[in-house]
Length: 193
Image (tube, rainbow, N blue to C red; front, side):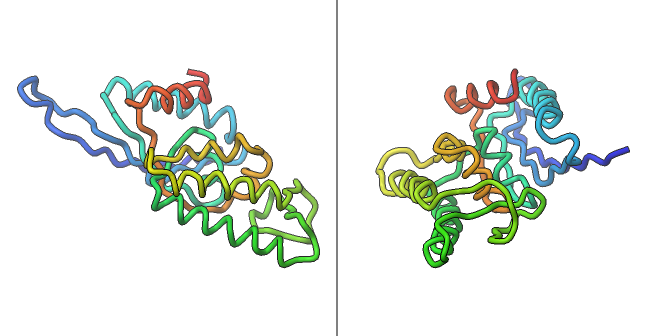
């Protein structure tokens, strides 16, 4: 059969006079699904884990989005990044935008089997204007004095195909705050909870 791999780290604290231990947050240090299980099966796994997390009183989920699809997948779940991490993601996407501007083409083609940018392979087309729109949204958040957190799914709302092409293969550290109703509702909606 196919292999599912997962490593989680639970951070806990004493529940005080009630006794026992209460989970503060869970860090998904490693989470790899076979290609056949990505999508709806991955959501079912997350739904099952989320039920456990709610029962345990987990307040926050943490991820290191990377490997091949994590940069996009965790964004779709609604994980957010702080401004420092957002600046790093923005730098990665800015490099991609510069590559587009410096080329003969005004588009990036993404090959689903190879997360690297390619001018030779057929695939989804991402326009320079779409990348610039994404950079502008990130810049507006970075430069605003308001919230420190940026929901990575916001990039997918600009253009899902562009977000997928640009976030696959990218690395970033994110959090899902389960006490934040907006973030929790988006997560629950995405996993059909």
